[in-house]
Image (tube, rainbow, N blue to C red; front, side):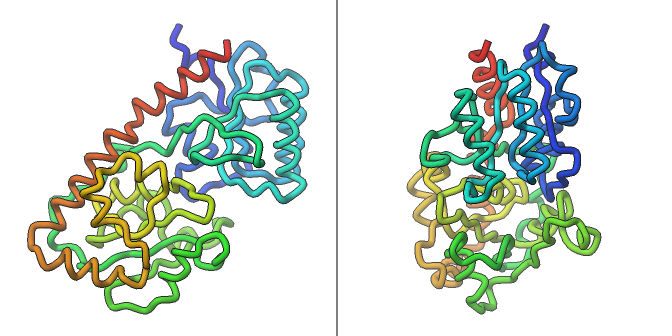
Length: 297
């Protein structure tokens, strides 16, 4: 029997992510069987991956119930490192008490206690946008994401506040789902990105490897902006010198310099896409996660 058949991905059915970064969209993209946390007693003989990326009080209390019922063969997926709320402390205490294995898309220290296994967001070939008409795209950079937290996203907020004819801002759709039919979510978001030659990529104060890095490659854009440590590790210095812009106010000048060469833009976008397709290959990332799961047994 394939190890994948022995895995169940347990989710909060009320969570509704705007992309494939968590819960059902993430599990589906990885090919896992999915069920609600409420049905945990059906899976005593399986490895249970618990998605702790959305942490409402109700969700955290249910995770606590699941783990206290049977903490063997449990793997916890973490995403945001908030850990200032009571809900976050529930998850922290469970992980530490039962010494649970964890994984995360971010190569950071959680709870100031441990570094989970690094399972970054993967490149999804099925979502790839053609670059056939790259030279017909807008010769601008698109900027998206949260625009209201300067303490979390200082680089990005500076970009949002900086007015330039070379940068277009995309309104964040929010997390409630109320305006998703009016704004860009999922596949329509990637299609929107692909209207531009450039995409401003950013991390945050903690150095998250956000999904923007793979989304940029899937959309076929040239990445410019801020690069976290784990992405810097996979991009050759020759390209990083072009892509990384320490001072966000210099982004328009970098765009103009690249546009001065008629052929450079497509070449850079193609090189970046090829790197991400290899370094963030779903096949390799999934194999690494299965290796971790195998070690639990």
